[in-house]
Amino acid sequence: MKAPPARADEMAEATETRAVAAPLAGALTAFVPLVVGSVLVSHDSNRALQRDGIAVIVAGFAAAPWVSHGIAGRWRRALVFGLAAAAASAGTLIAMSAQDPFDPSIGNHKRLPFGFMLTASFFLGAGGVVDSFVVGPASRGP
Image (cartoon, rainbow, N blue to C red; front, side, top):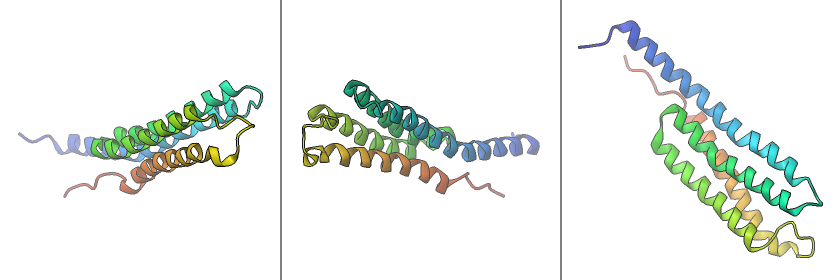
């Protein structure tokens, strides 16, 4: 038994609305923790707050692809992009625990693993959100 056409149109419109709103939600999931974490990192006198700020930032980067693809119902893409961003975010935290990047007594070359992982976390998280913009809403059938 088929659903009435009006109901099918409503469901297709709801799916399209979710697919359009999903990238925005993912972008906010990355941006809000970036702002909050940056405020924490700006406290030069407290390295514990700076490390907490980085943890907030990378948590947002790791969550953004899951949110953007999950809201749209594209779970395979959420898995691929989300796991990559989560792995880079975890790598950032591991590099930060191995060598404190906020210690002024160390040379810049010792901060490279942290900087590389933080940058990778950003690009993988943002890439997942950009992918949800590119994929967009599922096309409707005739």
